[in-house]
Image 1 (cartoon, one colour):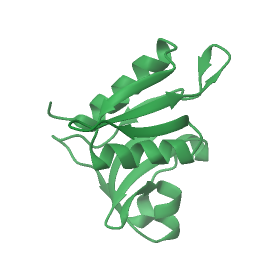
Image 2 (cartoon, one colour):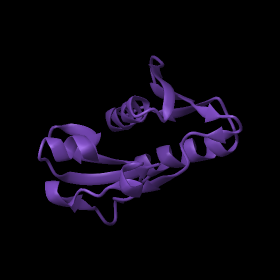
Image 3 (cartoon, helix red, strand yellow):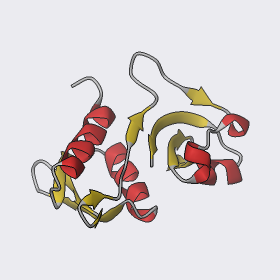
Image 4 (tube, helix red, strand yellow):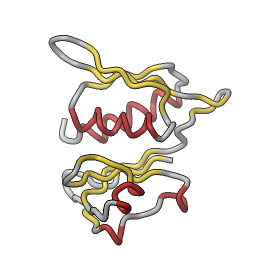
Length: 128
């Protein structure tokens, strides 16, 4: 697998469209950080890290009736083309209605948090 973050976003997107209650993703610290941001922003109900020899990150998805709360996920920075921004150029997703996930020197955070701390970094993905 060349792009684990893209795989994670695709698994979440497919589970939401299939109306599955949970989705399991192979564990990494970066994926766990992105999942915690999704939980904190209200896109996911719960995040659980489990497993002894091979950890998995299990996300419990949120729904409004028959529609997933996560309407869209877009991978911005790819292994072939990394996208870096300074603190002044951090994008706003859907005019502030969505979340840009940024990998900064102080960890993975939302675009709003990075702007407040005056940090730039790699734009991982957009969620709305």
